[in-house]
Length: 572
Image (cartoon, rainbow, N blue to C red; front, side, top):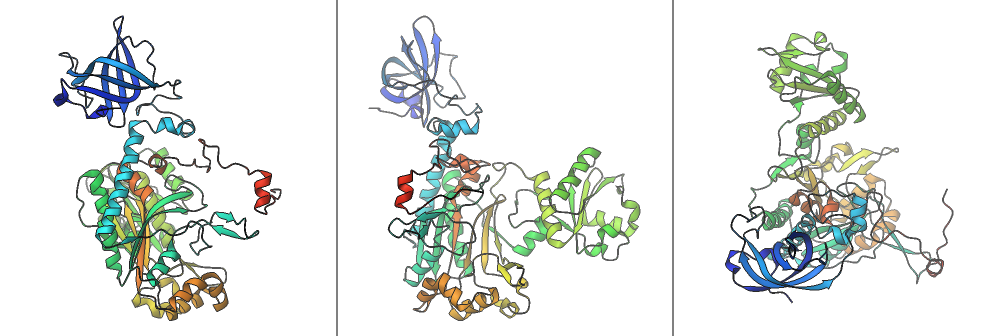
């Protein structure tokens, strides 16, 4: 039906008779009978000179045949890939009529998101959306090729599964054949892939669909896609190497550029320097440790377990109202308050409502530690360590973080996460990940005496401040697993009920193993320069979880509910 794609024609095709197919992007009258018709497909736009095009309308589907020729002198369009040429002597065949679209199919036109999603089949015609989904396809292809080259075998795991200890709320699927019983949709293939390790598939991967019934946000949907992998007889460094190879190959397939080896930070260092375990390394503004400086201070507000500073270069002329806004922001993030200080004069000196309460040594120490120069602004939070870190980390992002698509791609591995994140009401530790994560070998002795100090062999990959995924070395030894269960307060009976099929498999010889999962939606969003993963998913849900295109979720018919043995109770 066609000989060429619209955007692939160029000067070498001049004199060639061609047939192109696509949608009408634009029609412009040229005299009484002639019209310029811009025909669009996913490769671009070509101008066609058509005689008698009065009935041609926007978004009609046409087949146009004609001869490629150079545009008349002075009429070339340097902003268009096909701007030197046009198709003349055209014959037009209408393949499908079209009503006026609900919004123009152009990247420079804003449309309400609900309208875009309701008419997603029109929205996906836009060059931006075509580009994004084709980037996604290139990423998937590169990931799959990289994993195969590393000796991994692709295995599909079930979508109808049993509840797992992932921590998030699961989607339940009622069983018609066993009324009152339910499957769940997998949060991840975690347990299934560990069973594959016991089965001897020592390098598994899957482009896996996963589902979690969690609140939606810019980087989270109910359903998501991940590169899921697991390998046997590996160390943490082995797993990090596998994932690095695959992710950098995917980025190279999109950008055409090679990326330096991925940096590595411990969780503790990331929190101290950046105030987050998802640091964006594209910009500086590292947090400054001031705790020791104020160990004996007379200023009561700085008598705290942790004092953190942040230098904002060139912000010394900010207005009082803007500074008050920063104080309000810090309080909203959980801090007791925020102190600001302006560096002024040639020395420089610090100007602030609180400097009269500080000693000359403390003022000098702040200037030295932060490196403040005249015209700079210093922000200080004094609080519990985790509060001070996270508040200042968020302020750092608020004040310095560039848009997601700006600057270089800065990957970083975050390693040595805490094994436990807190103590529950009964004083038992709460696992930071799932209960199958192997403790750091140097910290086993702390499990009984100081569990919150125990590091884990878990790791995250971060790109430009986005967490791409998590993984860990798993517990494969029954004695270690039983010890972790005891620490968590999980009895032998509860462990058997919840995890019996995995623990039972381990009795038949489980190799040392570890794995990872890369969030493909997030990886593609960063590579495409999008702030929201909805822009790289063909048919996403809104933030409320609705699908404007299909109207889902919808009530089920009474008969369908009856077949499933379900009766809806009134909601209170």
